Each structure stands twice: as structure tokens, then as C-alpha cells.
Length: 485
Image 1 (cartoon, rainbow, N blue to C red):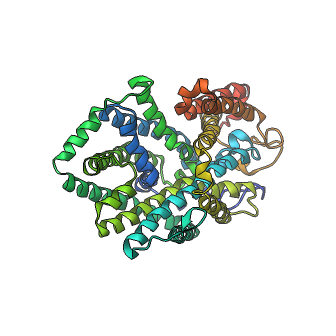
Image 2: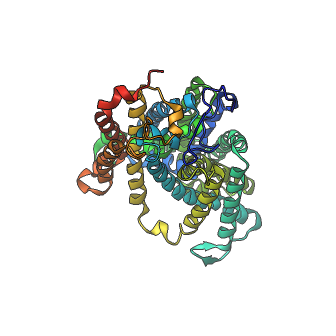
Image 3: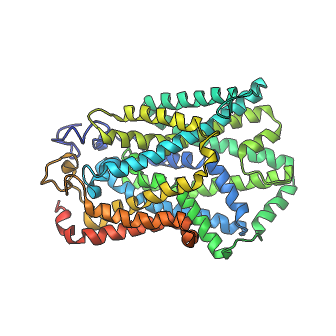
């Protein structure tokens, strides 16, 4: 980075700095709106994402248009949220763990980074397993080999497939951000192409009966205990929760974008627009499966297995693999790589953090079938999400209300006790107090029966309470915190 670059760090503490955490100069950024669009498209286009979208249409008893509207509204809300966090990283070129130092302290930022890393590593292992099911489907279709149960609930074919996916993902990550960008750039359009082909195949087989299947979905008519308004809000809350983890560390991606305008355009196309298209395709395919097979299938692998077309099975299996690897890189691999690098920058680079992530996640994914999936994992995952929520509110309130969008960039990498972000031995106890108050409430919505109806909004409420509490606690220092330049 040139010495005259305004983002160049002149002096730094080795405990806070390495090349991966350093601000990315504007001249080194290569991403535009298309790359951001692909980040979100890959985040949407996983096996789990398809199942979630399809399930929303048939689980709440709402009119199909109401569900689609709720999904699109969630896309706009997520777009607004990431525009807020993304802006600071576009301006200063810093990843999430460094941005968190503004509010949590230069050492205190390790706490949110560690939490985010734990969530990501868990999901990285789980998504690696799900991606391996697509490869297993491919092997079975081509070689007519089923395998026998051998170890931890997975067949020999399953373990071979799992190893292939794990090695492929790690190899791609180790090639660097340019290779990841290329992968995401062609993965998203490919998935849409195959989904359209699958929809046409279902449409041709179902014929005019498809319209009846779609009509029954759009008519709704099911029962939801809280009524239609509560059901609609639950749809919106569920979709926001799906993106919750990426919302927090979105700066890890926006720092690669050339301008804020390109980031916002990419967010618009990649969230409400792409989400609407993807959800509509999932709706048509699911409705068609109901016509053809007598039940609405929400898992795309189940649909492909019944289409009885080897070539379509091969192409679809590869596509599901590509899509799930895409979301894994976006949501679950890059974030913990940076988060782990932030723990000991002098010894752990993002590359080393990626290797650590892959190693731990391999064990988690390998235990998914036999152990983890049997443990009632939903509350565990919901709890982690609820814990993360206040961190978003604190980050946004600090940057926009306390700092007034001005940052002392050099001091983010300094442990000088007189530094702006040193607080109390590197920790901001006021931010920790705000986090504690908000986290108790958001976690309670998951575990306390009386608050069960609020569980779908645990993330939004946790973020709002965290931000409000942080602003109130930090308000006396707001004038001193906001630099004049």
C-alpha cells in the first residue's frame, strides 16, 4: 500500500495487525455490483435456502402472494441493514473484526469476532455435509453404487463425497479471493439456469395440471395459530433470520467493492430482486412436484431423484453442490478466517484461519448424521443467532450515532492507552453492558415459553435493544468520540 494512501497504516501493534486485517486501498479493489449480486445469490441458492423458501409457501396457510410479498419485504429489510454496515467498510476498507474495535475496544473486538467465528464454523461443517449429499447423488446416478452403512451413520459413498467437498472447498479458499470471486461469478448464473431447466421439466410433465397446483398454493387456507398477520410477520422474520449471520460481518465483503453506489446496486439486485426470482422458481417446482408425486416436495434432491432423467440428475446434483459450496464460502468460511486472524494477527493469517476452520468443521460435519442432528439442534442454533444480534445494533449505533461516520483509522491498530479505542485495557465495558442486556432478552425469546411468539424476531429485537442501550451508555462520550476530520 503506498505511503501516501489515506488508508495506509503508518504504525501498528503486531497484536492488532497483519496484511489480511489492514485496510484495503481503493486501488486494489476489483468488485462491482455484479460481484455483490453474486455474493447474495450464492447465499440464497443453497439446498437449505430452497427448502426454506418452498416451506414458507405451504406451512403458514397464507395466500401465496402474501408469502411472496413477505419474502420480498424481508429482502428489502436485509438490504437496508447491510447497506448500513457495508458503508463503513467501503469507506475505510476494513473487515468486520477491525470495525468492531470502534465499539468494543481494540481487544474487546475479539469477543464478537470469536462468537461470529463459532457460529460460522458450525454451519460450515453442516453445509459441507449437505453439499456432499449432492455429490453422493451424482455418484449413485452415474455408477449405480449405493454403498453400505459403515461409520457414524454415513455410507462409504457418503464419506468419499464428504471428503471430496471438504478438499475442494479448502483448495478453492487457499487459491485466494480472486479465485473465490470467479467461482461466485459463474456459480450463481449456473444455478438459476438449472433451476429454470428443472422447472420446465416439471412443467412439461405436469402439463395443465400445474396451474391447479399453483392455484391451491396461492389460495392458502391453512391454519396458523396466530392468525394471518402473525403468520405474515413470521415469514418476514424467518427470512431475515436466514441472513442474520452475514448481516453482521457484511463488511468482510463490501471492503472489496470500488464504490458505495456499486455496493447498493448489488444489494438491490442480489436481495429483493434475486430473492423474488428464486422464491418464485421454488414455488413453481414445489407445486409441480405436488401434482406429479401426490405431495409437495420441498427438498430439491428428492425431486431430482423422482424425475427419472440421468442427465438432469447429474447436472442438478453438480449444481446443488456448486450452490451449497457458494453459500459456505460466503457465509461460513471467509468470516471465521478473518475472525481467527484477529485473535493472534502476528501468528494467524486469514489463510491459516481458513485451515483451522476447515479442520474443526470437518469434525462437525462428520458427526452431523450420528450425533449433532439428534440433539435438538434448532434451539442451539437459534440461541447463537440471538447472541449475535446485539452486536449488529452496537456496531451500527456506534458508527452512525456516536462516531458520526468518522473514524480514527490509525488508532484501530494501536494499543496506546491514550488511544480512542483503548477504553479500559482495550475493552469497552459500556458496550459489553449493552450487549449483556440485549442478549439476555433475545436469548430469552428462544428459551422462555412466555416469549415464544417473539422468537421469530429475536434477531431484530436483540439488535434494536443492543443499539439503543449502547447509544444511551455511550452518549455522554459522544462528542469526544466523534473526530472532527
